[in-house]
Figure 1 (cartoon, rainbow, N blue to C red):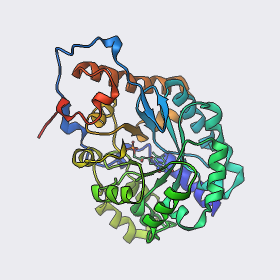
Figure 2 (cartoon, helix red, strand yellow; figure 1 turned 180 degrees about the vertical axis):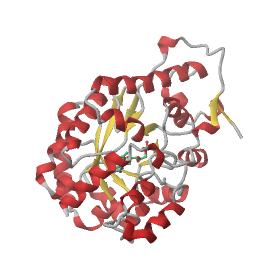
Figure 3 (cartoon, rainbow, N blue to C red; figure 1 turned 120 degrees about the vertical axis):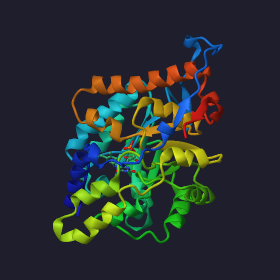
Figure 4 (cartoon, rainbow, N blue to C red; figure 1 turned 90 degrees about the vertical axis):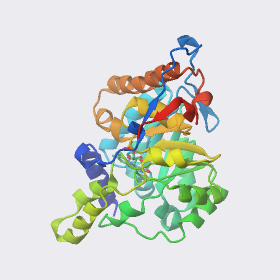
Length: 344
Ligand SMILES: Cc1cc2nc3c(=O)[nH]c(=O)nc-3n(C[C@H](O)[C@H](O)[C@H](O)COP(=O)(O)O)c2cc1C
């Protein structure tokens, strides 16, 4: 079982780098452009990209979305991501901690993140299937304590699991389990998808269950149905062909944002491919943007300085966009749709 998880994680790290497996639909940020303001009435040096999340200050509202942990390769990978997150002052989501809960030997690939990022926000991650049955809350809380995690992210991935030969497809009772964990788990609980997105209706249900922060993790970037399709063998031909029908299944991130009116804290991830997408996501209503696929390749190399540089371009782009539209604080950018023009 443990070996299965490790092999899957390895496959994912390799396949997720293949852009041909991304969605062919976009997350929708390309349908928006900022309205240039030639009279911003602010000075560039007054612009502050700082924000507060989970009661802690970040230098800019970016989350490195949950990717890996639990295999040998992910030790360096998480070390790189954590070093970079600490250096630039953004948040870091770790990949599912399931492997570490089932095999003590792989715990270091997660714990290294807190070693390299002593002060920034680090969030643990687990699938909803695990909180519904196999994992005890005490065990999860104990590992989160060792990680000094600031929150636990629960991912909902019904279709990814359905296209995995070894997938866990028991989703009956998921909302109830989330409600119990919101009430009883010692850390804040954040709920996300993995790339098919949370619809408005699902977000409302999560709010009803007491969830205060959601991450859309919508369609437009990494595509877990196409990735799982690649992992299916020829003797699973029916499932493999069926997966093709679902290659563009999901809620594009910018569309969810556009239609969402909520007082929840919203993280927008899924298909943020270029730095300007972060500024657009925030103007469309997100408090923070999340990026996974666009950072994956660089994070798998040993060149942490390059990864830091890449993240600093995201930060600088946000700062320049704020100057370009004439706002000097993140709070003035969040949900300020009057700054955007929709291209039809
Ligand atoms: C290699 C890789 C591994 C991932 N593993 C996890 C995971 O363990 N848990 C999770 O919630 N999401 C996982 N994701 C999904 C991302 O967190 C994110 O929701 C998704 O990739 C969409 O964002 P993107 O378009 O920026 O890649 C993974 C993504 C990648 C690329």
